[in-house]
Structures are given as structure tokens and as C-alpha cells.
Amino acid sequence: MSTISENLLPDSLLDTFRERAVIHDRENTFPEADLADLRERGYLRLLVPTELGGLGAPCSRPHGSSAGSPRPRPPRRCR
Image 1 (cartoon, helix red, strand yellow):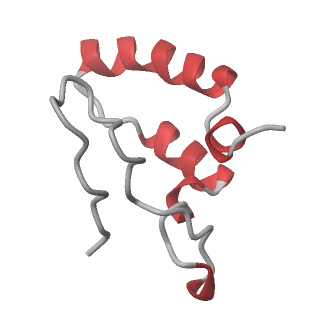
Image 2 (spheres, helix red, strand yellow; image 1 turned 180 degrees about the horizontal axis):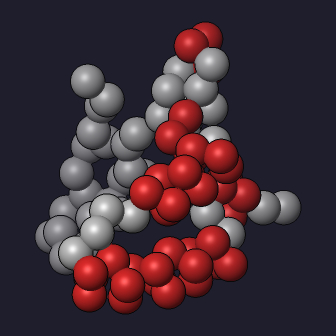
């Protein structure tokens, strides 16, 4: 079973972004093609509520997932 992130950001797409990043860094350009790819895959709808046409993913982390945190933090809420 695949997760939302695997569907929206497959490794092949991330590899493409990495390849393009070298060019954007060197030429100081905006990664328009990356943004278009994210839009096409539906990534930009990830946190939009389903009733508004989005995917409705929560914008909080699971308890205790903060790296280096001495104790778990409560989940963050979307504003």
C-alpha cells in the first residue's frame, strides 16, 4: 500500500527536482517546471480541505516526531 507522499512525490520526481536544482542554483532561476509538476500531481491540494476540493491531509505531525526534541510536542494546527 502506498502513502499519499509516495503518490504525490515519487522518487523519480524528486530525482528530477534534484537534477534541475543544480541548474537553478547555477543560473539563479525560479524552478517553474518543478512547481508545474507539483500542481499537475495534486501536491498543492494536499492540505486543502476535501470540501474545498483538496486532499484533506492533516497539517500536524504525529506526537513525538520532532527530531532532537526532549519530549513530544502537541500537534500543530493549520491556521
